Amino acid sequence: MSDGLGGCCCCYCIRQTEIGIVEQFGQFKDLKPAGLACVLWPIQDVKARLSLRTQQLDVNCETKTRDNVFVNVVISVQFAIIAAEAFNAHYKLTDPYSQITSYVYDVIRSTIPKLTLDETFAAKEEITHKVVESLQTTMNDYGYSISKALVTDLSPDHKVKAAMNEINAQKRLRAAANEKAEAEKIIHVKAAEADAESKYLSGVGVARQRQAIVNGLRDSIIDFSDGVEGTRPKDVMDLLLLTQYFDMIKEVGSNGAQKTLFLPHGPGSVTDLQANLRSGLMNNLDKPLKIER
Image 1 (tube, one colour):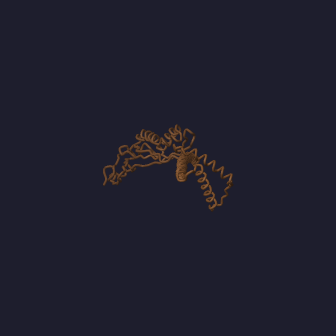
Image 2 (cartoon, one colour):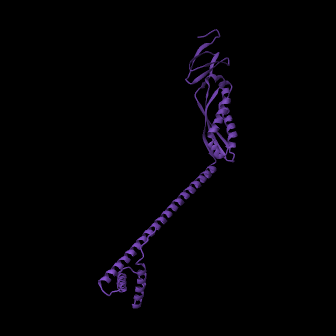
Image 3 (cartoon, one colour):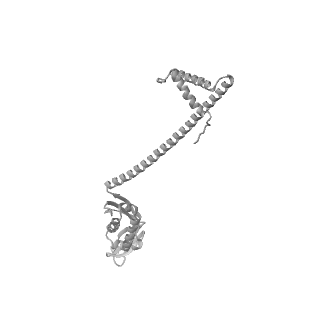
């Protein structure tokens, strides 16, 4: 098929999510959407097919923070061609990737040097907002829309990372040491409280035991004095103390433990022992048992 210009009709297929640029004698003629496109060849031709899909460009930029730490920042910029502005995207911009990279460099190297390393890690949202705002203002004039900009990597030098990890590890070790010390303190306090309670109860038991012994001796003396006429309490006490003294000697001698016990033993020693025990016992016979906590 031909017309008055001496050309023939050629058909082109424009794929989905693409737009065709038609030129006539090297001059822009029309935009062809997806589907069948007919042009008058060789006068007209589909010179380019532009993808309308969202594209991603990863920009790797190295810069320095305010506290003089060099960091490597990777910004992932997601952009697409505006279908109605395909003319500007094709004819006004030779290399959109280089253009976007330059603007990302400008934003990163003007923002991060104002922040410390810790502030940089916390300011990802601020950085991406500034990148998107700067790119949208510029790239819209060239037929590109900027959908998102993501900080996908933020890495300081490996020595700096090792130092940061060491600082964090030391903080955790210090916290663990404090917790361990507090736990040991609680254990010692509880042990001291338990020991004090144990000693108190042991003292109460010993006091009650001694009181029971005193009461028993007193009852024995009274019964013996009532049963045998002319017997004095002193005679009964001497007899009881002497009996218990010999029982103690027998118990020590029959004990199989390998121990040595030195006791003064003789008539004079027994008499002194009786006098001392009687004196202490008689002084406590009339005293009531008082247990205070």
